[in-house]
Length: 152
Length: 187
Image 1 (cartoon, each protein chain N blue to C red):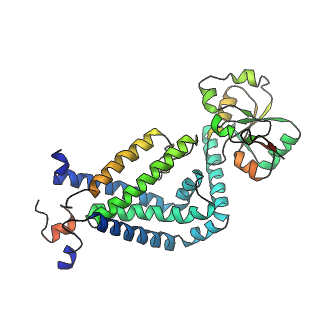
Image 2 (cartoon, rainbow over the protein chains, first blue to last red):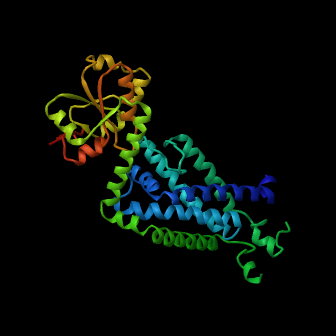
C-alpha cells in the first residue's frame, strides 16, 4: 500500500497512462476515416452521430494524455479518460454479447478484435485512471519543477 | 511563475476535477469538429456511411488478394442474378448469433469457426466441388467471408465468390432476406 502513495510510482503511472492515450489519440487523428469506420462497425450509433463522436474522442484522448504527461489539470484529464474507458468497456461488453466480430479500434494500426482481452485491458486502465483521480496532490510535474514545487 | 502555480492546485476536489474534465472535453470537441469539418458534414447525410463502406470493401479486397489470389469477389447485382436463377449456394460465414438476426433467403449458415474446428464437414453439406458458392458475412468490416472462401478454395471448390457487401448490403438493396426471429421472410 505504501507503493501507491509513492511519488515516483504515481509519476510512472501518470506517464504510462498519458503516453498511451496520447499515442492512441494521435493515431486516430491522423486517419479520421479509419476511426469513424470503427465507430460505425459497432452499429450502436445513428449515422448522424458517427462523425461528431469519431472526431471528438481522439482529441479528448490527446488532450487528456497531454495533461497527464505534463501534470496540468491531471485529475480532470484522468477523469475524462475514466469516462472514456467506462464507455469503451460498456461498448465492448455489448458487442461481445451481440456476437460482433469486428476490430476494436482501440489503437490505430493495431489489428485487435473485440474480446475479453480488450475488456480486461480497459479495466486495468480504468483502475489506473481512477487511481490518478484519487491522488492527494499531483507532484513531479514539469510545471511544478519550474516553480520549485517538486519537493515531495 | 505565479500564474503557472495556479495551474497546480495543492488539492483538487472532485468538483474541480469535474470542471477540468468538462473544459477538456469541450476543447476536444471544438478542435475535433473544427479540424474535421468536412467529415462532420458528411455524417449528417449518408455520405460518410457510403465512404466508410467503400473504403472497407477496398481494404477487404486488398486483404483477400494477400490471402489467396484464387478468391474472387462478386457484386450485388451479379449475386442477385445467380440467386434468381438458383445457380449458386449462398453461405453465411457469420456466427450463429448473427445468422439468427437475419440472413440471405435460402442461404446456409455455417460459421467459419465450425469449419476450421471441423465441427461441420463442408463436403457433406456441399458435396459438389463444382458448385458455385457465394460466401458472405457482415460486409467490408468483417473478413470471415473471405476466410471461408479461402477454406473452400483450399478444399478443392472451384467456383467460390465473396459477396463483399455482405448481408447488410444485400438487405439494404431490398433483396430477399430471412429473419428467423422476426418470423417472416421479407420480399
